[in-house]
Image (tube, rainbow, N blue to C red; front, side, top):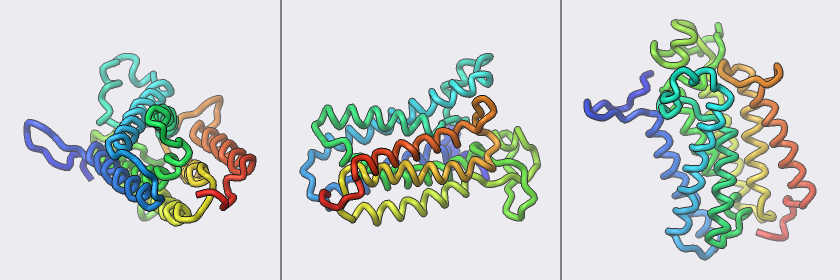
Length: 257
């Protein structure tokens, strides 16, 4: 495994960036296809603007979130904050940024935010799965040491290789990638059923939170707050909030597409 997909000498194409580009393109295709299936009238340029705004907001907030909770690693070299190709995007920050920026863009273009969130949910999980493959090749978001036969030794110079040189680690990126693909398939099927707007997006938050809560037991680089695993705490909070909306607003009813 090597983080560089293609080295042209004057420029390098890394798996990390390549997977994000693929996630964006695949997401656009899925979202436009679902909007057409639902018979939603839209201007394609406006939809693309909403997607790109949410995508860029997710990247920005994911980096800010990571740096805030890992500032000790950057305080002596602030320029490293800009080196996102070295890893360091926190998914919960990305979810927050994507929701806030996507909501603003939907309101700007007068598109129902809950409907658009439902349409985007499977595409987001697919994008997260592709992103985890980028993490695998980049050697970040890595796991703890393991004696299991599928443990992976990461290349020297990668975050995993630096922290645990020559040691087999849990391939937590693969764990989460597989769970994301499984839940993406479930959301894709549920997206075809008639439910109130917001139902599929709340399920996305629940499904992803379950995946992240499970995988965090083997993650080596998770953040901790007062001795508690922060991603697991946030996951529990997202599940609780999502269930509140689903049950309180009866989003599971099938009287509205």
